[in-house]
Structure formats: structure tokens, C-alpha cells
Image 1: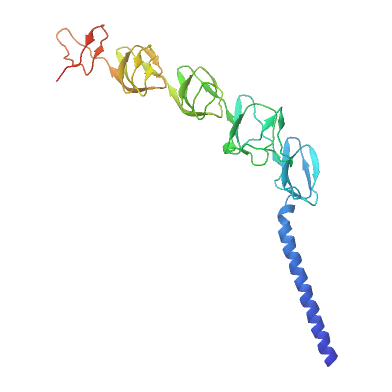
Image 2: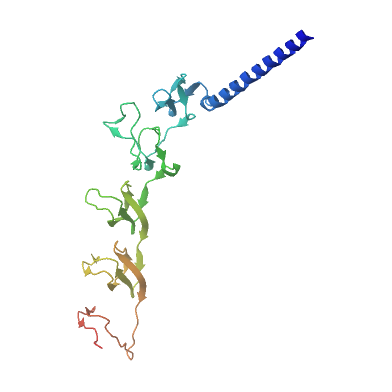
Length: 277
């Protein structure tokens, strides 16, 4: 009886010890599972790439195809095979956190990690297919066509930072016809179209800032004036259209009584003075 009890106790202890070892193996397999999701061997086709992290140096590198990559024990594949960015003619894309490039090569630090300009943006045009390096991102995941402006249309632009002869905050118009080539330092505010004026109509305009109008006259901020002419009129960046004013047709036995709101010279070349109260 004593021998049988010892045997059962020893068997229970072995079973208990065996169960504990299986639990540790299960935990180890679960902790390693994310690193092996993409397999140990990745076959990359042309214009494909992956990101691989080196656990010894903590450096993430880019592997480009065509190649067959075999993962080492100290490496971890971070992404599945991805297609490189392809920009066709007359298109562009915006890359956030772009890598630094010097003499056509990506700049790396002493550890071999590609340097990026965090918080910056870069506009890339038609070129050979390229991969996205770690921390780089395609803005809104879009590749966009260049904007083609027709006659009598314009883009209102604003400088986000100082560059060339522009200061941050400057606004100007890029007038068509033409193809607008975007810049990372410039923001597109709106697209404007010309207003078509028929005979016997005028355009009431107001200056948003001190400027010179299309006829060469100096205008003060807030000043209003009437543009008389026919055809298309495209307001300048510091001008805004208030309304289209129709002409008043007078017969032989009718007249208009007018009062000057400020001193000015009328269309007949006569000076008018504001009435004093």
C-alpha cells in the first residue's frame, strides 16, 4: 500500500511539472507569433519592398525587390510586401516626414538608420518608383494630377514660410492658362474664375488691402470703386467683387439726382466733392 501511494504521488508530481512546462512554452510561442506572421522567407517581386527591424542594433532598414529575403534570428519583418510608389507623368504626391537625401543618396546616421525630416513635407513628381522609408507616409494615400488652369481662371496661393522672394503670409494669384506646379511651402486657398461683364453693366469692387488695381490706380484698404468695361474681369488677390451693377437708362425727359459720398472724379473727368453736413 505504501509503495502504491508513493507511486501515485510521484506520478501526480510529474504530471504537475509537465503541465507547468507546457504553459511556459505556450506563452513563449504567443510572444513570438507576431514576428513570424510574414514567414521567415519573403520573395519580393520587382518594385516591391518590406521593412525589416534588427533587434540587435534597433535599426529598421528597407529591402527592395526583386530578391528573396531570408530572416535571421535577430531580425523581425515589420510589413508585408508592398508596392513602391509610382508617379505617372503630370502627377505628384506629398510625402510626410521625408528622408534626407544628399547627392542622390539617402542620408543615414552612424547606426545606419535613415534620417528623416520629422514634421516636414516634400512634393515628388514623375520619377522612378520609390519605397517609403520608416516614418515616411503618403499624404492621404493619394497620387494627384497636376492642376491645369484654363483662360480667365486663377489659383489664389499663400506662402506658409519664407522662400525665394516670398514671405510667410504673402498671397498672390497664379493665372491661367498654364499648369500649376505645387510647392511644399505654398498652400492653395481657392480657384477663381473671371466674371463676364455684358454691355451696360459695371462691377463694384472693394480693396481688402492697399493695392494697385488692374488699371494702375492705387487703392486704399476698404476703398470701393466701379469698374466699367466689357468682357471677362478677373479680380486681383487684394480685390473682392461686391456686386454687378446694371446701368440706368435715362430718357429725354428723365434725370437722376446724385450725391457724392466722398471726393472723387467721375467718368466724365469732373471732380466731385462730398457734401458737408
